[in-house]
Image (cartoon, rainbow, N blue to C red; front, side, top):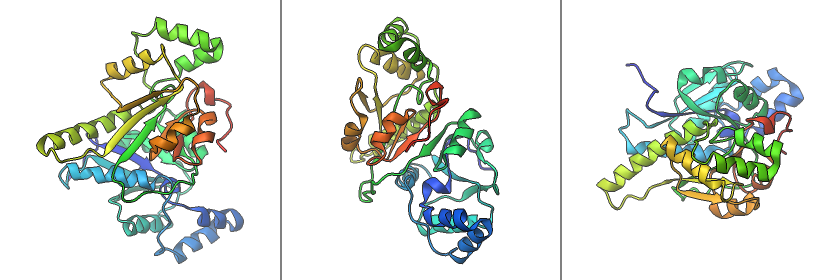
Length: 314
């Protein structure tokens, strides 16, 4: 039977984001590909440790209990540079951890992001910054998952996701104005254009998919008042008044929403993240991510002019 992806939220994820691959990567760097292949074969039944994006993926897939088992709302697909043989350990690890992921693309040494449109993906997550930059350069919505010291609270069923606005949900037109004209010029530009919605950024469609899931949760609560929604979405941006109005107006005109909005006007985002505690925070600026990543699972979106010659996050 044909399986359609068009009405589902589809996320692509590299094994480097889902699992901790430090041990195998060290073998590859120090001993080469053949030793790496032998290492993976020798440990094929040893489940890989959980990686930074594992808590996000586990909770996202849990929302499939809102639909029939044969018609899930969320699909997560592995996109990997591994060859199919070494990919066996990845798939066995997925099974060992109890994740309902059955689909994968393994392309020995070649990028898999060109297949994102064919698979209706609105997000690709990887621990490989070069792969993410290549995907974004090709117009695909991708993020580099950064290392963090945060550990997951497995007893907490809520999934919290936080987004920056410019260069993430919206394009970087206003950021370019800020770079060229400074804060006063940026504010004047946003006030003049307050009624004009921004053009979409790389993760606008991913937010749309999350909002579809939230609507299903609202339906569940209407049928069962005891149901507690598990998905919460926040906007955390360096904008402040009066530039906040265009951001909120853009979301409204796109037909999208967030549960929380933080307009920080230059306040350090890391302090807010420590309390908000998202399972993933998406931002396009390394300056912000250097502060958030140690304590918050953070994702760099290398989009727009601010990232044209920017270094990789530390």
